[in-house]
Every structure is written in structure tokens, then in C-alpha cells.
Image 1: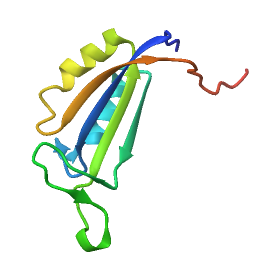
Image 2: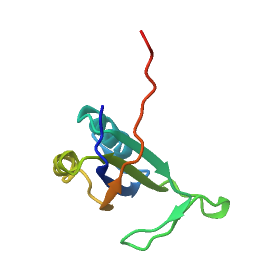
Image 3: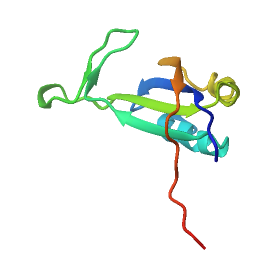
Image 4: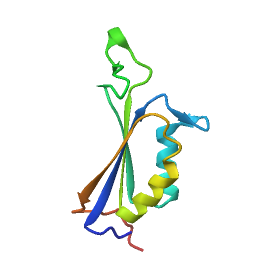
Amino acid sequence: MELPSEGQLLRIFIGESDKYEGQPLYEWIVMKAREYRLAGATVTRGIMGYGANSHIHTSTILRLSTDLPIVVEIIDTPEKIKVFLSFIDGVIKEGLVTLERAEVKIYRSHTTET
């Protein structure tokens, strides 16, 4: 798959306990991004954070949270990101979604010679 040098980064901030159709929301988002054939997706689990309600979520022993911050990052062309974002818009009930311009320098996959 070829990816132009002008890309877009979709960043989705949600909670670890957020669900959709019985599965973790972050898993659902990544699987849908793959179905939409987007260039790539990564999920990162935060150790501490807060959102619009200002409730602290942390992984410290004294305040063990079952709802740590999750960030899903997806990159592709602005056109494909726009279509995907319109698809997932109604699914994200709480959280933050941002878009950034991304300059793609390297996008490679390991290929096996035949």
C-alpha cells in the first residue's frame, strides 16, 4: 500500500472501560480501521490522565483505576480519515477526538520475495 507524504493523524482519547457492542471500544475502533483499510492504527494505554469531567484516572497502587486512559492513533489520507471519522462519530459517547496534519516520511511493510 502506498501512502502519500501528506497524511492525517486521527487521535482518539477514550477510557479503557468504554465498550461498544460488548467489546472494548479501542479494539472495535482498530478492527473497523482495518476493515476500512486505513494505513495503520496504534493503541496506547496511559498511566494517568483526566478528561472533560476532571476525574483523575491513575495506575498507582493507592488509587488503582479500572478505567485508564486509552489513546487510539490512526493515520491515512485526509479523505479516508474523514470517511472513517463520520462512521465512528456516533459510537464515541465520551472522549476527545483530534486531527493533525502528518508528514509521512517512511511507510513500509516487510515483504517476502517469491
